[in-house]
Structures are given as C-alpha cells and as structure tokens.
Image (tube, rainbow, N blue to C red; front, top):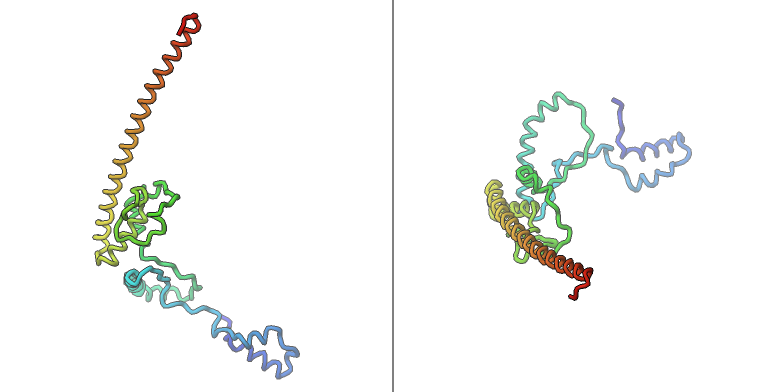
Length: 227
C-alpha cells in the first residue's frame, strides 16, 4: 500500500519547495490552504456509535440508549473473530437514524398487516391535527376513524416511557384498547349501512308507486278518458 502523507503538511511542503526554487510561483490554492488547513487524515473518523439517536423526550432517549447498548454488546462479542478474518478497513458509511418506536412499529405491523391496507384519511380535523398528546389512545372530540396503527405505536411508547410498563405489557394494553375501538367503529358502520339500506328501500317503494300512477295516467290519456 502506497504511503499517504498527512494533508496538514501539504502547505508546509509547498512552502519548502518555493524556498528551494523548485516551484517558481505559489499555487492559487496555497493561501486558502494556509488559512483553512485540512484535517490530519482524509479518512473520516468513525463515531463511537453508528446510530444517530433521535428521540422526543429524555425518557425516550434513555430507552433508546439502553437498546443500543445491548446491540453494541452483542456486536462486540463477535467483532474479534470478524476482525481476524477481515483485516481490510471498510469505508465509512452514514450513520443509521434510529427512532425509539421503530422496533414497536415493526412488531405491530407484523401482527396486523391489514392495517397497512386501510385507507388513510388525508383531511385532518382540529382534534387530530399535529397531535402530540398520546396519554390516551383516543382523545375527547376525536373520531374513531382517526385512530390508526401509528397512534397505537405512539400510545405504547408513552406507556413504556411514562407508565414504566414493559414492552409486552404496553403492547397488550394498547392493542386491547385498539381492538375495542375497532369493534365500536365496525358496529357504527354496520348500523349506518342498515339505515342507508332502509332509506333506499323506502325510496324505491315510493318511486315504484309514483311510476305506477304515472303509467295509469298515460293510459287514461291515450283512451281519451278524463283524469
């Protein structure tokens, strides 16, 4: 492998060449390089953690940090044998952005895949717009169709970070309340469809009766009878 000198010594090296008359004119980039010197290496230093923790509260940050520590311990156990087999340095890659609800989201949609195919209401009401309070699964004034899988995940995360529940306990509580709301929503939809069917049936009978009287009137008119 060829020797790569430190980039920080490039300006000094060019200055020495100019003093020895090996370079007649200074390069145009030399003043800029002297004012803004480069780092000691062209290879970026690898961060202590490959994960970029982004959380909304201190409790979420603590929960995410605990999960990352467990992952790092598992990686450290198998890193020694891996380094012995792969001595070549891998190029640095962008850090992964990790949110505390990513794991909860994967588990929820794995157990409820049909929630992904449920239509999403794009028209937001005042109750569900920019919602930040997930202390309850459904807030006062919200409609049942506004509760989706993302609300359940946020509610589960709230139970874990603020109610000190385990992941399994919070998942059981959040999904049980979600099932009750879904059953209530389906019951209201069935009642609405039944009312619509009755209204259409009544309207159909009235329409048939009106057509019958109109047909009788036309027949009497053709026969020259008075109405």
